[in-house]
Image (tube, rainbow, N blue to C red):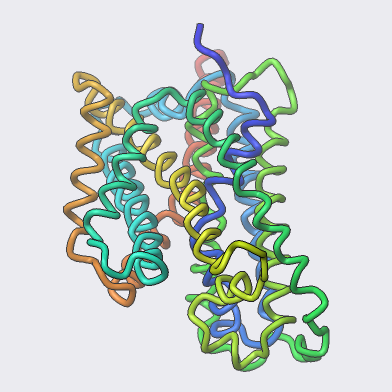
Amino acid sequence: MSEKIAPFHLAILIYMIQSGVTLYKLPRMLAVNFGTNGWIIVLIVSFVAGINIFLISLVNRFRKGESVFEIMEGLIPRKVMAPFYILLALIWSILALLVGKDYILITQVLTFQNSSLLLLYSIVLILAFYLVVKDIYTISKTTTIFFFLTIWMTFLLIYHIPYSSVMRLTPFIFKEGTNSIRGLIEVYTAFLGFELVLFLFPYIDQKRPKWFLSVYVGHIITTVVYTLTCLVSFMYFSFEQLKLISFPVLNLISYVEIELIERIESLVFNLFLMKILITVVMYLWAAKLLLHRAIPAINEKWLATLSILIAFFVTLRVDVVYELAPWLLIFGFAAAGIAIGLPVLLLFVLWVRRIGRRRRHG
């Protein structure tokens, strides 16, 4: 019998999937799209994501021990669902590699200006592949180790408190924003990752009746980190500065002075690879499950390799930050649609099946 994921590890896993490279751009994103006091949007979008998580909790409540695949195939045959599984796998695989490439492009600018983008990208993909082919329990344990190696970075914000001012927040709310609709989508994608818990149902320790609270805990940790980071950014920089700085959080970190470390922002951002790696690995892991369900005759390791190679060649020509942004927006929007639509679809299928059972027994 394979080992199960404990609630503690699940909470950390959810946080690590959600927390990505968007954090470093989030304050500027909020300032440009929502204007003054844009950090408040983090709390609003977090609440919306919480409702999304609640829909997933309903799926867990009514599923009666079934996996996502068993729920769907209880109404629709597997052969009919196969194209849908492949489409989801393709979207998540491409999104995972886009997230990885986004991180690598920034790393190249910060630290490895003379290094090959393809070489750095390949290293990340090899690390991701090494974890993807492992079982989910091993991935969750690795995630916990990465969590404790990176969570200390959040406490660097304490350094900026004496230099921050409440006056920089201004009394105006959402003034001078330019694109609230696009901004909402971008901020919502920063919270994505919780939807993967749908595929974790068979691997979680179900003996603890309130295990799903761990998903909320992980989401709350993400919300706290995002909110504190954005609030300090709005209090440390002026509003005009926030709109001009590409990566405000990296600028925040660069002001921290620690003996023996000349450029702490490079150290912090390089360690951030651990978080990015978990996001990439978990989306690829879900894609692997979907492909194996659609094409069960092929070994999972080969399917993981196939999903990475397809996504790699699709995103190969995207090698500049300004080219990557629209790709991230499109696939982020698609992933947000899946995060909202998939639990709704599963609840609908469960409802239809329940009506069918009542009629048969009636």
